[in-house]
Length: 286
Image (cartoon, rainbow, N blue to C red):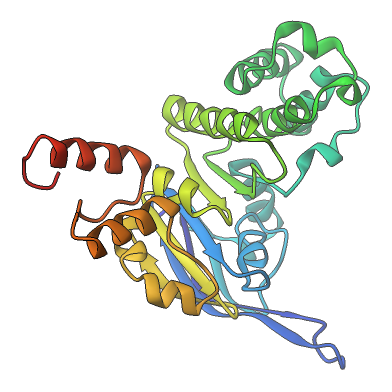
């Protein structure tokens, strides 16, 4: 059974007003437990609206959202449980830090779950470990941290609730390359050690190609493509028509093929390195 499933999910902003706009049109998607789903699409395609339904922050105009088989519309308890099972991190979450210390900020979610102080403390330290926050930083004000440290503290606050599903909306936006890499490593560590399902919205084709098992492509409130990174990025022309692009390394591989040096389809740097090394050794394409 999927950990999250949507059936004919439709959402309308400003219903029955002159500003009415349908943001999602009958979106049906199944997400298996333990998967890493990448969600891509042009700005305004419905990505962020979609993920806000997955823990009950938004209620559908029609259709259904199921978390672990439970319809979120079945009652207040179902929606509340979903918010503990499905952790959602918005863009630039560091602007949502508010407490006196980093430790207290990370502890906010677990305390709302009604856990004992001993369990809250344990979760704070575990979550700080997942995101690489040093122990000395936990007693500081979150406003004393660097930009990357603030981002990690905000992510730790969600991880401390130990959600079975971790949803991240552009988690690396605005960070330098080193900071981006650190955040992605933190996410992968959490997934590896907890078995969590991860859903990540991003504009970075390189990130999605490297991390995701499956990709859902949104356009005008609908999923217009769904498949593995290889399935999706093989459709370069269709992606360009949607205002998207294939990873840079894929474009390089395509150009090499045009120049008579084909290395085969590549969607990550690792694949390209292996393919080029195989070519140089005179063996068939890797």
